[in-house]
Length: 150
Figure 1 (cartoon, helix red, strand yellow):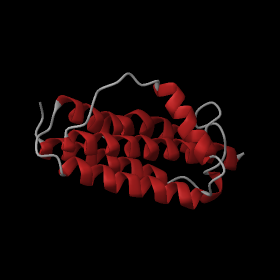
Figure 2 (figure 1 turned 90 degrees about the vertical axis):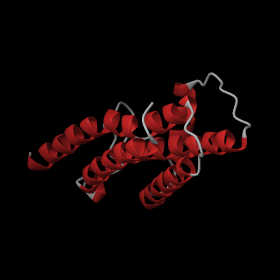
Figure 3 (figure 1 turned 180 degrees about the horizontal axis):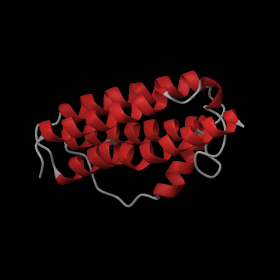
């Protein structure tokens, strides 16, 4: 198992890549569908933020000794998270994602011991999640730029 420091360094590096990529999305293109089928960049950012908010709850439960692993319907939760944010302005979704990320890192840091469950939630909702989305985000930025050039 990795140390807390190593895990946090990986998350920080991934977050930096994610934020740098988001900065390259033109403000008027955040709600254009196509990032993924039926998703805009705003939807993806809501998705990231909501999974981190979910992880915060898990970290709190682990810290106080009430966590019980359970099977999650990841696709259903993801659909619910995205749908819940569809009517929100981009600025709200961004703010919620950034706030979720702050709480995500804070609650992970509050853990005295890093369990396998805590590590899995931290990596899957952080560094691995950014790694999953940043390549497509960079491609999408290029696609959007190509649309503007034509």
